[in-house]
Length: 379
Ligand code: PMP
Image (cartoon, rainbow, N blue to C red; front, side, top):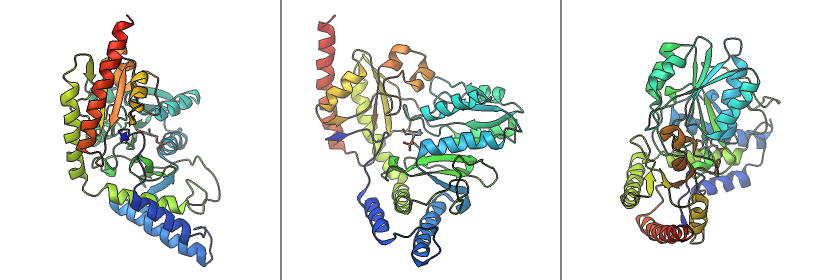
């Protein structure tokens, strides 16, 4: 099999699974219990949390574990909206967000919030002038993805933060960092809140976190005993947290070396795709190399994904979360419906190999030729 859908999810790495298994086997106590078994679990929990916080230079109370990035995004947007509604009802997001952000915005709009969508240029970069114009005294939150999941465009969060705070120092800045953390270096101090997910970094599914600066407040989505964390009650899922900590430590090691490796593979793919007139490469100078989005103008993307699957090659149409729709990111960048309708996303990781990419390209070219011929004949 050739797996090139690492932005949809990743396999759990061996060492991470070992950590998960050990925590499950040897630490059965509820970390909220006061007896010895609970205390033993609490010690492990504290140590896993401390390790994560050290990686990002944040305080332990600034880390809120969630089931993943969808929950973290909900917690951030709804939590801020509820906490600061007395100050204003205006929220700004980009046109290159994950569908979860748009769904939350739709919900908040029905609750009386006003949502603005900031423009971007054709390379996917947020339009700074438009952002400036859109920030008003009643703007409580701006949410901008660190790296878009469809085309991999990376936003300059530090500059965006400076713009936001200059226009309105009270406006809070959230970033969905799900496709950034573990792939490129990030600085959580560029934002007030950040979402991430373990299963994108060779960790297990069902765990992620929201970073929340001590300077901002949230209304919790989940109420309960508040023993572990008053912003997200419930028994802490110790094995998942330990596994997340392990996955993060591995992911953040040799980040630049791994990125350089992925860049080479990306270039090898682009060199072949650019030989085809009927293939548009939706990669801009701001795209990270892990995500390569192309439009196959002569074939249906779903048909192509299934044809590749017949060869045990796994890629996706736009994203696992929005397959079948127009690619929002490609639409936002080029306003070309045909191009946005025919996208394929190939997502790489540092475990992808040169040999895999060569085999992938052979299969790709064979299947593409077959489907294009079929389309021509049926005309
Ligand atoms: N945000 C982005 C940018 C993503 O790529 C994803 C995963 N497709 C999510 C949020 C949702 O993450 P999770 O599966 O952890 O809920």
